[in-house]
Image (cartoon, rainbow, N blue to C red):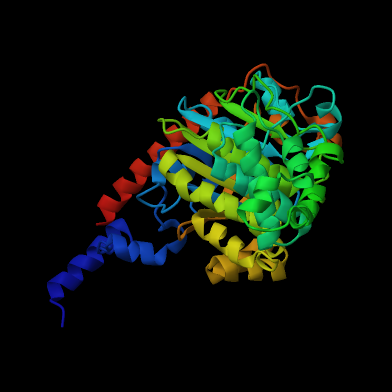
Length: 470
């Protein structure tokens, strides 16, 4: 029972000052308990070193990503897979990412631009803005002195040349070479490489040797010369398409002199090639191997190799095998491979399922834009996404994507500056009247500095609140 004096004192105080206020005990909790309550904001970020992508949707924190900074600590491989249906922001993400990466002086980017508009590739505006001329591979212009890439370029090793020739043939035929056809190709290639010393060997030389093999080639295997000729006939017919067929001019001569492999951005414009034809994977194989031997060097530069319509690579077992080697050894040479694909089902259910799985395994970063529910579920199974991420993918709006960086999964809104906007959006025909004119220079520095300052301020506030709570 309370002391009567205390009761009287409380009554008198209440009469003078109103209702007596009670004292609330301080709430004490740990950082771990706070994170358990506020799960969306508890996931750790990727650091503050790299290029700004945008903001995390749930926490509002700035989202920064750089495979070169994260490699070895948070990333086992620097390669990146971008998925999503058209119109959801994949192209805008690729382009702003490249523009922001090029702000670092030690970065260099190669783009295989397989899509186009108004007779030029999607990357034409960005190339113009940076003062770069795209390398346009076009069968029509190649015949009149256009760009050529030689599969037998001396800069490519003999083993690399033979592997590339086999890939070209196997992609065109739709199946692997048998032992006899492979032998005919091997002896023709060996003869051309040893007998032609005053110029670059070209595909025409290989076709000629396949049609008219030398007697010593047959004698070496103790077979009849007519058998060797018959074994190489189908191979000659396939290669003849690159010499006299619809792809004539692009690969049947010495590599064009003057291709600048030291430019910060190198764009291969493939927009004049039918993206659904057999020519596209052949073209990508030739460009990929040529770059492997001429562009990638053991220096201190960090290189990004971005391929649009990359299902042409991943979906072909023969082309995928070439790129697997490039991805495997590219890590040692500072190469980040970025593959842009519309649907994962385009590649995992095809003839190259094994090769596709190997390449997908090397991509430690996955960015998934909006997909239909069934496609999202299939993507989630293949990539091992958490259930909540799979459920949210069909509801994503343009510009927002699920990012999975080696198990660190976030929903991120991509931010585009006004200076970048006219350069990165591809629907110009629909929005031309509302788009401001192309600026003289890409000026994202102020925005980037502002975002980085806000990120640092946010981190300081987080640290301060954590210490207070603790």
